[in-house]
Image 1 (tube, helix red, strand yellow):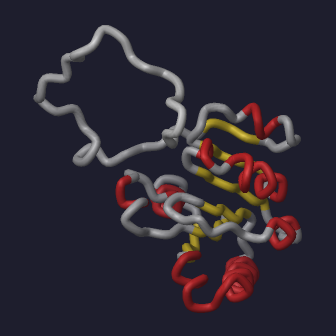
Image 2 (image 1 turned 45 degrees about the horizontal axis):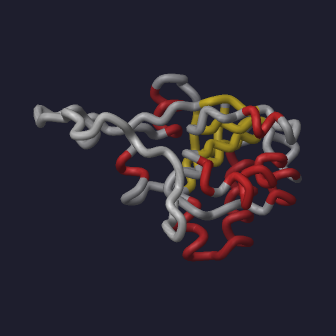
Length: 167
């Protein structure tokens, strides 16, 4: 099977211990062409990115397009994605809690499948979007248990909001 994977590598994505394109090629045995959407966007803008995706899909005869939205605030125009009828379209998002209402609930409707690092995928189903939970994986050398004492200094935890504070 042929894939075109849109995946950027920057300081944010280096914290993740995953590469979708590498996994598909190494473990799935698939033919994968990877495009860095951030680099293409910086060089050619949104229309240039769309043209590069179109060209890669035609050149590789890819059956699947995978948009890995980790580490980028770029969004593909849903009209463009919806128009890509000759391939299965997958949208992989990180923890989409902060931007679900602004972006993802609209963009997701152009894709055939959404994989979210947020377990609350039922909200995609409210928009008739096929979605599944996709747990994040982080590099063990950065995010690992330490030998320091993690004893709690308080008997309870505060859950809620404080007026005038963000969060």
